[in-house]
Amino acid sequence: MKMKIKRCIQAAGMVGAVVFMTAASVDAASIINYTTNAAGTEFVGGVNSLTLNSSAGLAATLTFAPNTTSGTGIPSNINLGIFKLVCMTCTTNQGTTFSAFTFDLIVDDTTDGATGEFVGTSTGGTVSDNSSTLQIAWATSPVNSLQLGPGTSNSLSGNFGATEFNLIAGSTLIVAPNSGSTEGDTTVQGQVSGVPEPATFALIGAGLLGLGFWRYGRFSPR
Image (tube, rainbow, N blue to C red; front, side):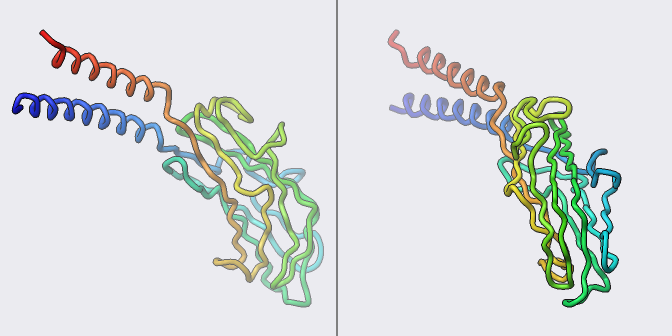
């Protein structure tokens, strides 16, 4: 009986070692580093800048602040950047107007070595101190999708591997200058997800197979 208990403890130790090695491998593969501060993130169409000026009425700006460096586990909700709307002299009765615009948002997956692009378009709108009709509709180029990856799907360069970047909503409503948890700030919300690399599954299989042979050799009749 004591020998059987000892063998069970040894078997449990083997299982624990396999699980530990697998968990370490999954953990190493599930941290994704990304940035939206890559070249090409900008208002386009003659602007080519991170700041867009109003086209009529009082002076106002819509500025994009990229997410410069982030590391996150997967799956996870992520921040792809923040639009800030500022109109210093706007009132509830006097406001400003923005013309139609296009915005390119480049996602640089530095872990996998791939980049992709979300394209946002807006018909423009009016802004006062406490209201905004500005809205950005998103789609990825060249396909109408809100997802980058896996693999080379919607990539501009490289390969996302098993990683997927998604926009949570198909459109972003730009809050008024005096609205939001931080006045005038609108976060572009996304998600990153993925699956363990094939090597991880191979590790699991090899560990369990080895454990099976060990148990068979130890407990088979002699």
